[in-house]
Length: 385
Image (cartoon, rainbow, N blue to C red; front, top):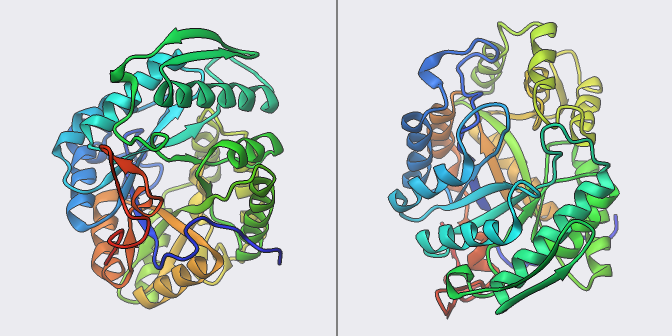
């Protein structure tokens, strides 16, 4: 295998994050929606604040055009209630005028005192049908405009999608003064990989076999090296952990007990990215799984029958899950975004069985982001159990 270059290769442990179900989809049984788990402020803020108290270091606040709450509004409301957790807010490039988006991000970064990270999404807007190349070119321009606004006193940009000449003022500058929030990115097409290699900080992957993950990481490392950069790697994956493997497998079976193929397909295709290349890779993985849905030890693809995006879960007892995570970390994966069903229950289960055994850190800390004008050490003091 080619050498995988990661920026945090000398740091032990990983950033362990959870998922805020602000776009619906939280349930005890997939495809049988129970209003106890609806995506309202009460339920979703409770999940996020519980993750904060339990010691998770980041939490993904996703985005959807079909269902759920607005990402930035939700994040801004919950931010002052948090104590230590970072927020990973998803933004859709092209949705807002870039200077206005930059100001919104900077404002949220100040509210959080620098505990903000950003998930870059390059999907089509509703009604659009841009090619992959065009979508990622628009994202590239948005990112470049954001960085100009955060770093300079004047935005001077002319591209294919945007032509902006605009002075910036102090409120546009982020609290994190070393380039703004870290950018997390997930994408598989060549234009997407190139965008991440040039501009983003953490390459997020959906679960696949370890061999395929290593291939993705090697390719990204080579692309980033071409820009004189290194990136970190993350994995977005569901989790089902119980005291015994038998109990975990039983919980997985129960989760899918009322899903039929027709309903599962409806759920998968309702999302804006339901036909993306990344989703097709998840489908290919399901096709290679065994009769119980496992594609390799403890990696279960059954959950993808009723989800459009991340389509696999780690299933097992605490020792099995911990061993799998250590294998991923040995490969170079430094960030994990977990979720489970119901999200609050599984958040608490993982925190009880596995989280205390992991050495964890905050990715902005280990990357030496300057917070409020005071530079953090990239290593000393940045890692904690």
